[in-house]
Length: 228
Ligand code: ADP
Image (tube, rainbow, N blue to C red):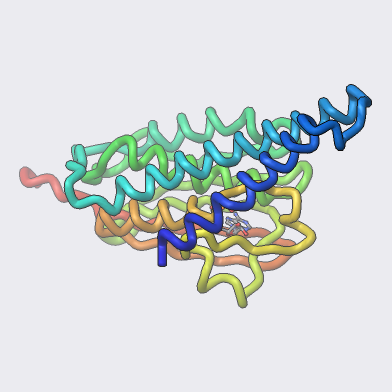
């Protein structure tokens, strides 16, 4: 079933690229260099999204594989979260999206794979930018709560209708509508996020209101230090 889904996802961009190149090579597109250039630009955009899809697929497969050894270590994720927010600022600029981060200097330690944590927060913050409005805001907070570290990534974006919420963590699921028509994505980001959270014995929740915004809440177990 998964292979069928992947084949379908690969087919559309490949067919589009073939179509653009065919039109260019057979001259159907005409002689206008501006039109020809536009077609090649579109073919390039579609190849770029194919590369993103393949990268997400590789991450997904790696997380599924039992043979891949996780490099779990005791981590204070405050710096990873702060760095992720800094790196994402460039993505927010064209839309005027601003960031607020309320992360203590030091957080209780968790046992985690550093690169998977980077991927987890990058995916959530990147979605918070992507599905935000012009001049919107992204807020990231982290604090200990009971025996968990609770990280919240909130945005003031388009929100997710309740009917879609149960499916957004499914592979390749994307909400289609006028708001997301021009937003590209693979539909794998949140399924990767969920896999990472679960492989760290954590939980993820989502709260959302259409036209108001969305909050993803990640809870990861705090590793008790033996000396305490
Ligand atoms: P994509 O590559 O499409 O962003 P994801 O798996 O990351 O895939 O997300 C699945 C779908 O969930 C998205 O297509 C979008 O419709 C919805 N979504 C995810 N994050 C947000 C958010 N912060 N605000 C609104 N919708 C979101």
